[in-house]
Image (cartoon, rainbow, N blue to C red; front, side, top):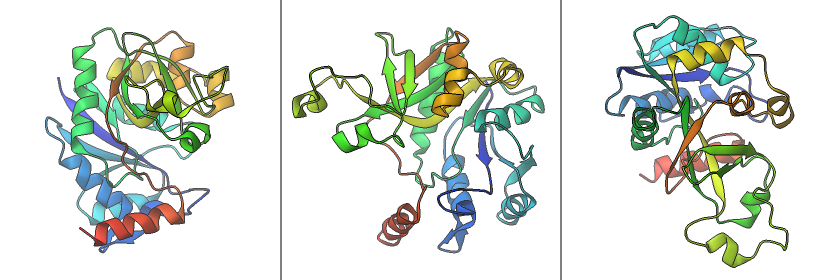
Length: 250
């Protein structure tokens, strides 16, 4: 199957304005992410789906491929669906967030393989064990509940699954893990993306502000791969400063 990585890139950002253009080692956050995605094996190419000419110029400057998409896309998945409509020869599209410059190429390879290995699934994503109580309670950390076949039952910003008698250290340390942090890395079949773009946002999606709930609400199946660690995304100035420190210490 032909696999294409797409990086949905929005210029606006509420917590860290224009974060994708911030630079480390004379390269933007977007360029760092692009270069990490390019290192994934088995990928035909990497496209950046942008919403602003400044981002398009940035991608052009570092030698990447950019496609202009609508400014008002409801979600990153909708933005990738615009790209999918222009690439009929691609079977699987992988969604890599533009603010994850430390994304592991192996994770990209893993999520794309999930769709090949699970023909029953419409899309795939990954999750990591969640063992920190503060992270579990943090609404910015999305949780996923899985069935016994590693299909997603629900995604939420709430601390799920709810523990009626209260969470203990033993609960968090349990093996196999009982709590899972969703990682915003997706793979989709092309035909699913074309369907997704025609489907209005679901009620649950609007409440939680989680686009994957549009798929679950419609009865679509999401397979979830289990990974050990989570790449640090950049949402705040503190996140950016920590990335700079890690980069400089390499």
